[in-house]
Amino acid sequence: MALHLRWHGAPLRGLTMRCSLRILWVLVFVCCLAQPCLAGPTTLVWAPSPDSTVTGYIVSVGTSPGVYTQTFDVGPTTTWVPPALSPAQTYYFSVQAYDQFGTRSDYSNSVILPANARLVPDFGTDGTADIVWQHPQGWLSVWHMQKEQLGSAVLLQPAQVTDPNWQVVAIADIDGDGKTDLIWRHQTSGLIAAWLMNGTVLQRDVLLTPSTVSDPRWKIVATADMDNDGHVDLIWQHDGGTVAAWLMNGTVLKDSVLLSPSSVPAGTWRIVGAADLDQDGKADLLWQHPDGWLAAWLMDGVVMRDSPLLNPQKVGGGTSWAIRGVADFNQDGRPDLLWQHVDGWISIWYMDGLSLVDAVLVNPSRVPPGTWKIVGPR
Image: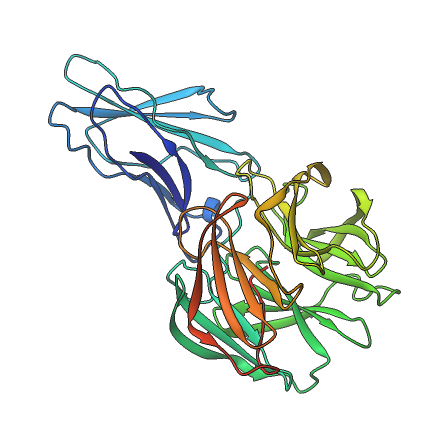
């Protein structure tokens, strides 16, 4: 039996539990889709135990793994609204069942609500990850997905940029309004801008501050909250291999820092996404090598603490298959990898941390080569 945590429609998967009482539940967070998860109403929900001797439940809450500083006897109900949660704090939850004599089950597995948990990259209202496309002629489209199945495809509004030198480089809620936005970079001028969105409709466009960098060899490669302040940050990589982060306050630069380590050999590893790969509440970096090797930097803020290879460690064909996005497509609480082949094929790797669980083709599985390119989520 397993305990799961969902926030904003996406469960954060836990481990198998053993209980002295028979318990079967799914623990989920239900959040207001119109706001960031921790800013809106949050409700803890689980399915009732099938054990007829169970008379109630106790929810335990802590800020460290396995250390619970608060307990709440919620009685026989299977929904509970936690007290005010700080968006800068990681929380750990566990549930016990008890019977009429007060006998408690073992703790369930612990589940995590990470600090500043990122919104699902969703341009609709279903809380599931979507795929963003850009055409070489500037057209923009979103695939609303149900796991690997296309639900519907829509053009953004506006549906096209007149200057195709503007390229979408990242997808993130940069203004903190709970809605996924587009981050752009002009390929010749170096200007950086954001489309602040309401679903698939542009609300307003803004230049970032600063709006450019002097060296065009710096590229935005991912977004993540690297300093746990609740704001999306920009991750940069130089063509020479140096890696850095812009720590942001919305669309305004707060500080720029080099990562530690601060570089990889030029022409080798490239950052292809960022996500919490090891479920510690901190954003990690995903890398792909031109020879097909796959690795992660498990981060503590801007400091790398480990650099394991993924399992499998490598894909054939070098970069013929390229990771184009990172998001939880099957809603198991683990980031999955979205791939696109140079011939137009599209695939998802469903992951368990750093390990592949299943590889599936998206349906539809292909776009004409040299046309539409996946530009997010990442």
